[in-house]
Amino acid sequence: MKAAVIVFPGSNREGDVLRALRQAGAEVHTVWHAETELPAGTDLAVLPGGFSYGDYLRCGAIAGRAAVMGAVRAHAARGGLVLGICNGFQILCESGLLPGILMRNANLRFLCHRQKLRVERNDTAFTRAYAKDQVIDVCVAHGEGNYFADEETLRRIEGEGRVAFRYANAAGGIVADANVNGSLNAIAGIYSEGLNVLGMMPHPENLIDDLVGGTDGRGLFESLVRAA
Ligand SMILES: NC(=O)CC[C@H](N)C(=O)O
Image (cartoon, rainbow, N blue to C red):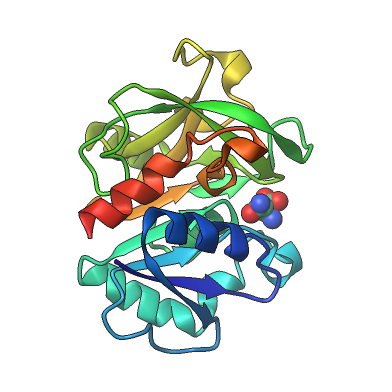
């Protein structure tokens, strides 16, 4: 599997996601935001976490209009896989590749801690290595992760089974206490209509090694390598 990790000025998780992809067996290339093409034969484009363009305007707003996004959009339109994590999710929403928007966390604080997620479905390229409704441990690290969409969009996303992950408690319960940033319907990640684009706020790439606290994040990268 060939993956292209896009780097913007201010990205800071590109090394983490590169390591997670390599560990799962992918061939990984980094691509600077000013490029207008992805490496030939790219299966997966990854928008990593960070603070692209210093989070000016809104997180991801400037990166969403970067030159490389034309190539990412074309890749997605061909059915190619795209993964956006945290700032990457914000960029996907800002570029129109995914519906809705990420607002300031409800408590107006930057959140940085471990968090449980419920895997809503396991029949996509991103989640085959997990069980449906499995509760996984991930890390959250964001100031603007409060997912919002208008009523009709939300109904469509839910109706089409496009919620990938929800913030949950350890038993998989979707409860107010677990919804750390106030997202609508506790949404932590969503798919595109074709299920080939995934944007998610938490960081699975930061739990891929027992040495740093766990390996629940590995399944996502293993699923992608298997799918490709
Ligand atoms: N870790 C990240 O990608 C952070 C995303 C963004 N800068 C925020 O604070 O919301």
